[in-house]
Length: 265
Ligand code: SF4
Ligand code: SF4
Ligand code: FES
Picture (cartoon, helix red, strand yellow):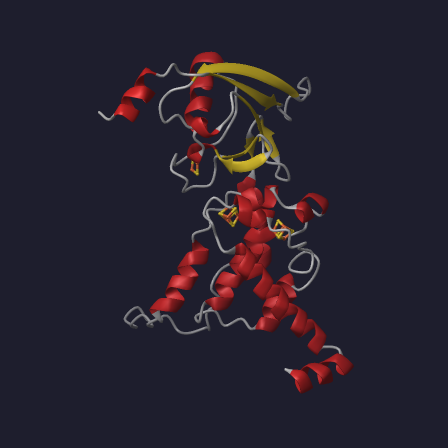
């Protein structure tokens, strides 16, 4: 055991205080309130462990979500001292002695820290048709899969790492003002399918989906989404690219500007 390990082992653990926003929208008698819990910190403790210990030993009524405990399913996102992050990937050693936990804003509240991100993600996915629109071909089970350039496959994979946690939407100023905004997650998905050579949709089709204030032109480019994305997706580059592309396409529809673009680009 190293000297540092010994130091850590003998260091008294902190007594942590958690102020958690409690509210059950299904109970007419419930009103939003902060409830305080205290818990002794342990080595490598995550917020996921804290919430489970509170529910196990102090308050079985506390509602929160989790599935994978490994930053993969996206369900444990909550507001931690005002910042959206995954409870299962947040270590208490990175938090102060007193922490405030609240549910993600924007999404439908189920109760306490639990929100229905799945319902919103499904609606967004149906609206933006986030699946490969392949050309109608007769199904041939013996057909050999088409090869894809490895660099392109890597770029698509990079965007496919989104876990639909909702952190980017919870941090987004535009989403707080307009409920129909598709968020960075929606624009990231369009960027992903636009790259996919198997998807037969054109830029005009994508323009129809996000070429307005509910998409790229509603984005204020302050990039809180990229700051909070737990998977470090390249949202900034993708949103900037899509907006430039869509702005050019929008201007091409204006006869005078269209002549200007074609004579200068
Ligand atoms: S883009 Fe990032 S923050 Fe947004 S839903 Fe996907 S993983 Fe979460
Ligand atoms: S850059 Fe756009 S999508 Fe990202 S948080 Fe800001 S307004 Fe929302
Ligand atoms: S529990 Fe799955 S991301 Fe945290």
